[in-house]
Length: 340
Length: 288
Image (cartoon, rainbow over all chains, first blue to last red; front, side):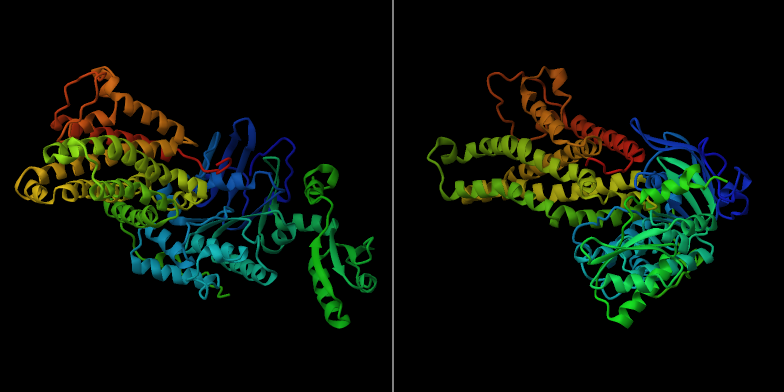
């Protein structure tokens, strides 16, 4: 990235392999945004975005409405920029015939052709690519195996859970083995086990040299899988760079979780034995515990341990920040301490 | 989960290119779209439309009214011309094509599934052609059945003996083919118009109704304006001309050798514009 907004901050840009300063001659091997703006009438989508993205996992991070999806839709030609230029490995996003041989996009649109099974859905769009029936069938089977959906492959997608539909979309995006994978909130709706597996798949794909551009508003997940982050806010790219910078900020800024359970006092006592617990406050109805922790991973491990050892009855566990945007605000404003 | 990032692009099957690829893609698009045009929930609305004249004419054959036209085989040609021109062509084919072709793109926008096509390595021009041809196949099959079925039911239902002579030893077969040809041309012309309406307008029903009005008042228009309609060219091709009433502004029918190519040229021009529009089309689904 060369320029975003006058107030943009950069997290260790020089050390970043995936987000590289300056528009250079290597544009054919990168995804390049040059001064790209998109307005929906008078409403700002993104403004004056300059980015260069190299192989690896690059996460677009920001609260809802920050412009992540707009940026992805611009990259894939679903939207056209109001001004500026976009080049995807030297191709224009409007050249769909070339672009989508190399790019797969798992969008957030949770809709499918009516009545289609998972297998039919994936196979059909492979036929549109130009593959023969047999080739399409083989690629479909391989894609279904990669997302562990072979058993449900011949059931109608409309009967699937949200997580399974997410897997179908993912399988469809990777079925033609693209070298660029654009994923809009790909972990939404997945259970923790599936999330871990999908994140591992993303890591393996990135290690194999693929470009993965992933949007998320869950900083914790971004931290787990990304090489680089692009932090967006109100249509502007406000920070970018290696993930460690963001991780540091997360570590310094605890997140709050509400655990609804039968013995919150017991849980609080166990949590305070660990230094990552910043605060534990019992809910007014005495059936829950607000926990502030700097390390959510460690917290969840500890919670599982307490449940097993103390036979704690847990009704629900959910993020309980009064305003999730507070975390982003913390990261994107100089008052929050991100500016360096 | 089987985590396998392998299978690099160079192990993928080789793909066709150029016209071979476009043909393959067009056929792939047609396969899915034809299935949707015949068997989707939206398509169910078409079957009563297709069956309406067949049902009415069957009732007419079973309970023939006691009128001069119905008692005289020589007048049956005029009766069918009125049924075809007034009910089948102007109304059922018109609205049936509106339903089929408008939904080719608009229906997918409403269902939020158009992006899957736009995210495939297929030229938007190929997509427009594939969808149009699929709509055409559905419309021709459905309204071809209506046209052929209604003419046969009317004739054989009322005058079986005379009809046998008329169709197998007289001009009946030629008339039947001419009516079928007009139906096909109507699907070709109206299909292109409704395809582009479905692309351009968020609610294409209003422009469709305006077009319907324009086509209906065609008989009142001066000769120059008559030519700015599809129905004018179709009427020039029907084998039995229907009286348009005392207020009709008379005009020379357009010869077939002009009417048919004109309709195809018009259709090609509309498809060209549709493809150009589709090429610049964005997808946000907001408000659809």
